[in-house]
Length: 552
Image (tube, rainbow, N blue to C red; front, side, top):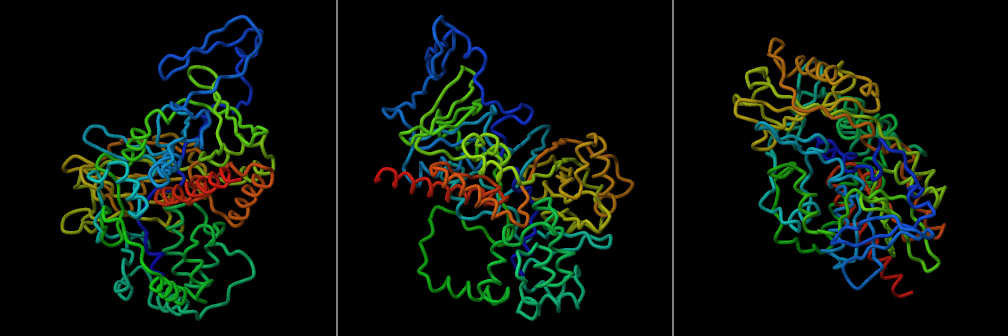
């Protein structure tokens, strides 16, 4: 059950990626009209750029871009410079000593949907807001030169869930379980018996999160803990989310140990029987269940990786097509600010959202494209507002301060907002003295109508909700700092997700495209930390593939 109590609120997934093709522009596989004339296109190299001019003559192929070394063929092209794409590149360079790569991005900046804004003494996020400080993401931060820029939240800061009109703390450790008032005594007893295995046996089908939790831990755990957690992390519907896909570690506990507690004990025993790999001595040791960021926000990580990779990252490059040659190499054709450019590579990693990858890969594998088109991304809006400190209800203050990570709102509690992050309490220097900074998320699978609402209507909805439990009803109107609508925000790991993903991967492999890899949050998981962990995994897969190609 302890895994379920990690209810730090963060805008996950989805937010780790931006489309390689601008969402407002249709994907085109055709070469611009200038290249289809009876003229030929002449490309003149000037420094790092390529100038395009029209000359008389037959049509010629787009030029290949020099990679800055003697090798004209790249080992890997990574499509998408969101956090996944950049971290895959960094992992290839630092962990596998392979710098013969290129990262391409359709937009004019890196970081995907990581969106840090600083203005008028405020610093806030409009995409993902934090990460769990696991060793992979700490390693990535240190390798990017950000050791002294790390900031960690207070591990003792409480998390809250709204229930019956009151914000109630979530248990952070086992000793909290007997005393916390979010659940009744019968609900706690039911959860305890279920955790040790006194509950119905697993059914013969893939369970939803709701089915798994109600069966194992009871209705109260589901309604008061897991349902709001699913809303806060996935903006999803737990009656559709797959337990195996969305919360695989907890699902495996029952599979391996016969119950959640049995699986936990078995996992501890197995871990103790395996010799420990020495931990990197450079890494800090976070205390407790905390979350992390950087002094000037999450954008520092992609910017730092971008700086280190230098001209291996190409911005404003729109991928038009991918083809495979008879010699086994992949040719990627791009529309760039300087004209059409092609790259040749032994492997390709697609880290763009699944719906973008589907469009790009359709000419390569219609079966893979069809699978990738099936994942659903609901809309979510991030609404950042500020109140004076005195606007906070007295009963919500701890030692005269608003302390905590934030709050989650079950859909049954009559509020529209999914959850609220106490940004100015979570990390230092996020708001001017005397001001409270709150990041609110609204929308998701159960509220897709937010896209038709105006910005003022979204602010009104959030403010109205907050005055029900956190803000004094007669407080002054909030200062509105930022409103960001994400039309396609977080991939939903619904029942069948893993099967559909495997079908896409198999279609590529069976179709002769073993060098094309899929990455990103719909593959690794929606949390920012999982995107980084997944990047290391993909980098290892690419390295193994390149070794196989070299020896075959």
